[in-house]
Every structure is written in structure tokens, then in C-alpha cells.
Amino acid sequence: MDTRFVLHSRHHARGAIRPVAVAIVAIFAALAAAAWVLIIRPHQELMREDAAAAHLSASASTATRAAATAPVDVEGMDVNELISEARTAMGEQRYLAPAGNNAFEFYLRVLEKDPGNKIASDALRETFPFAATAAEQAINSRDFGEAQREIDLLAKADPTNYTLTILRSKLDAQRKTLDQQQQLALDQKKTQQQQAEKAATEKLVADQLAEQQRVAATDKQKAAQAREPAQQATTPATAAAAAGGATAAAQGAAPSGETTPAVLIKAVAPHYPPSALRSRQEGWVVVSFTIDTEGKPEDVKILDSQPRRVFDRAALEAVSRYRFTPAMKNGVAVTATREQRLEFKL
Image (tube, rainbow, N blue to C red; front, side, top):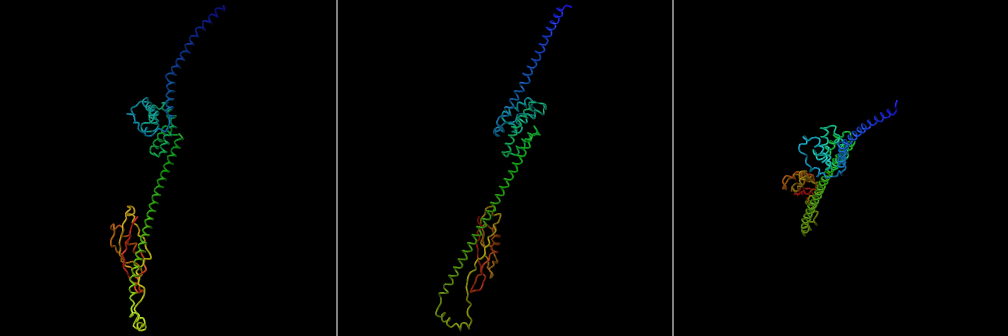
């Protein structure tokens, strides 16, 4: 057999296969390039845009985010329109707020319409930490209603994320702290009110005691002035009567002893009516009463008061509990009448 023919045949066959292989390689290369241009590169660019927007500072002002208005007819938007709105919200750092116009709600709507949409699912996953930071800021600012809404929105995107447990714990702690602070403020206010009432009562007691002491001193001075003329009226006839004491004694000596007015020994501060204390109301009451031979007030009556009937009962109860040393006449206890003005001041 002629070997030259065989070699020529093999060479011819090899030459025929080579163009086919080149063509196949060229087709695969073209498909790969088309896939890169039409699918892979656009997706990477979108992911880079979303990631860049997500990494912007989470401290943008709430006023700016709240100023954004919700798009018209969100329900009627298609997937592409929702993704566009979501990117805009990401660029403006509206991750979770305002309600109805934020990136998370737009991406969640995309997944409702297209459950397998990779752009929305990837964006939610990558943006989750920054959105959680925004929710934490709402907690720290004690906007508890908004914080709860944002946590619920995060839970729709990733219900098993451990960050949700941390956020819920912080929200509960802040709520308890606020409750404790409010209770402490109420307790402090109550304590201050009680201290004010105590100070008002103590002042009233001191004023009443000072007034009673002043009246007692005045009455004592008047009694002393009344005794001076009698002492100065000693006459020779009186001296003679003293010299003839035996005769006077036989006839029955006149009763002798100290004559003094009733003196207050125990004052009781009237109870300030709660209604008057709450309204910061002041006034006075004038009472009259009789001091019996045991030093107890009786027949206590209201002579005048201002304002009418506000402090009357408190004045009557207080005066009824006063105690006096009874008035004395020639060493014998007698009844006495007195008028007393009680001041009610804060």
C-alpha cells in the first residue's frame, strides 16, 4: 500500500476538523461575552450601587427622610419601578422610614411580585445591618411606636436574624427605663407636695401659737394694770380695819386671792383643707367660745370667715381641742369668753 496516500488522507482530515473546532470555540466565546455584557455586568453594577448606598452614614436626619412623599399608586408598580424606587430610597438613606416610602418596603413588594428576585433579596440581606442601626436610633430617641414598626419590618425581611432579638431587648429596656423615670418623677412630685403641706401646717401652728401667746401676754398686762389702782387705794380706814383684824375676822373676812385671765397652754393647728391646699387658697376665720372652769372651750361659734365656709370646719375642730388654765377671780376658777382669729396661709 502506498504510504504517501495514507499520509495525504490523514492530513486532509486534520485540515477539515480544525475549522470546526475554531468555529465552536468562537461560538462559546461569543456566548460568554454576551452573557457578561447582558447579564453579569449589569447585575454586578446594580449590586455595587446598592452596597454603596447602604454604606452611607445611617445618621441622616429623620426630618429629611420624613419629608419624602410616597410614590403614587405603589400597588400598581411593576418590579422594575419598585426596584427603581427602592434604589432612590437607599440613596436617601430611607431604609425603614417613613412608612410606605422606604427601601425595605419596596424590596419586600418586589419579592411579593417576584419571589425569586435576586436583586431584592440580596439588597435586603446586605442592607439589613444598616437598617437595624436606624431602628436602634429610633429606640434610643424613645420613639417606641416607630421603633416597633421598624423592627416588625426587619422581621419580614429576615425573621430569624439574631439582631432582632437584641433590638427587641433594647426596646423593652428603654420602655422600662422610661416607666421608672416617670414613676420616679411622680414620686418626687408627691414628696414635694407632702413637704409643702407639712411646711404649711407647721407654719400655721407656729403662727397660731405666737398669736395665742401675744393675746395671753396682752390679757395678763391688762389684768396687772387693773390691780394697780386697787393697790394704790389704801386709806387710813383700810389701815384701821387691818388693825382691828380680830373684829373683822369675827364678822367674816372678804374672800381674797389672785385674779387672772384664762391662759392658753395647748394650741392645736387646724387641718388645712385638701381642696384649699390644692387650689393654693388662703383665708381666715374668727370664732367665739367660752372657756369653762376646767380650761376647756365650749359653745364654739363662727363669727366671720373669708372665704365663707371653706375653713370653718377646720377652725371649729382646732379650737375645740385647745386647752387653757381657767380664768381666776379672787383665787376661784370662773368661766370666760374669748374671740379668736385663725389664719390659713400657705
